[in-house]
Image 1 (spheres, rainbow, N blue to C red):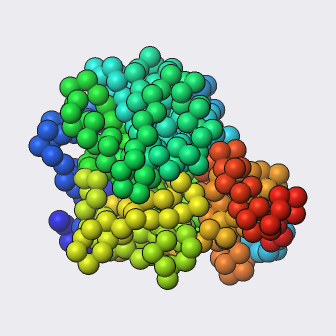
Image 2 (cartoon, helix red, strand yellow):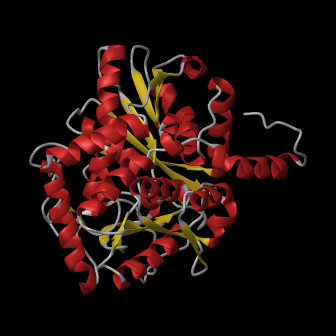
Amino acid sequence: PKAISSKFPYSDGYKSFPPDGFWGDFGGRFAPETLVPPLEAITRGFKAAMRDGEFRARLAFLLKNYVGRPTPLYYASNLTRRWNRARVYLKREDLAHTGSHKINNTVAQCLLAINLGKKRVIAETGAGQHGVATATAAALLNLECDVYMGSKDVERQSANVERMKLLGARVIAVNAGSMTLKDAINEAMRDWTARPHDTFYVIGSVVGPHPYPSMVAHFQSVIGAEARRQILSAEGRLPSRLIACVGGGSNAMGLFRPFYRDRGVAFIGVEAAGRGLDTLKHSATLSKGSPGVLHGARSYVLQDKNGQILETHSISAGLDYPGVGPEHSFYKETRRAIYAAADDDTALAGFDMLSRAEGILPALETAHALGYLDKTMPSTRKGESVIVCLSGRGDKDLGIVAASSKKKSGRTSRPRNI
């Protein structure tokens, strides 16, 4: 591993990545020998695609005309009045096709899979949005698609399971371990190890062995590149803070990366504190974890003293993961980003707050970042602006929110006050 440095580890800004896949001590490629050749082929294929004008033109066409980019940067005036401090903007990834930022990455990776001669793609999913986005891109590009999903998540995200099936994907429930995202990734890795000759693994976040963290971050950086242009147009200056939820961390990294060199812009990543950081029922990897190796890369992970991966909990399936992208770990160690945590109740309050203030139902993942606004907004000043990445819409979570309201109030008809 390389010594940690505060120097940005890219040769040409956020569009490139370190050749060995390390950011300081974090990243790398810890993979079985069977996967080294396909990982090398993907690395070469990705680099070639980024130099290929035809590939980039096709991707740009699909992002604009199929995905619906650029997504709006929306000034949330009602939300702003709640604190009467900095102006709050929402980067509306919930308005992208399929309802989240995930489609940015899956369309790009499925195009790359075709370039590499693959006929089948596999994916893992927690909240189901990456699974839906992969199934969508596979249907568009005529690829066979299998999606692994923990059986616990299959139950709590049943609507997205049906969407994947309607799109032609096979959803494979995983009953091992905690039956959540970690276990779905384990099974997807086993599948890919068995069939690297005809299968491309579409990883959904900035995790996994090199080059996946860099590749996914690059494809998601369209979020921050757009937001940077949009906020300069709207405000004439850069924002004081960028805020996003962090599980694996792809929406946050997509927003943060294009602002990396802008030292006056603070990065705040909000993890899932679950039932509290003083319990073992949380998913706050950067807040409570330690460096280790998980799913092919060295990063912060939730582990016991013997290095065994701990089970996690979050009300949001997409944040229910014991690891995080290695680039986020580098940002933490070099203090480029601050990582906080919001518990389940705070996330539910954030969901209610945006729904009632702006008429927008956010995903429970994003609701963690929204709930955290009550802590960070009082320290902002008038004349500043804050951008929150609204990573997905909340349709998929209505059952969870309704069940929580019923449990808390004792009856479904009583609204929850915040």
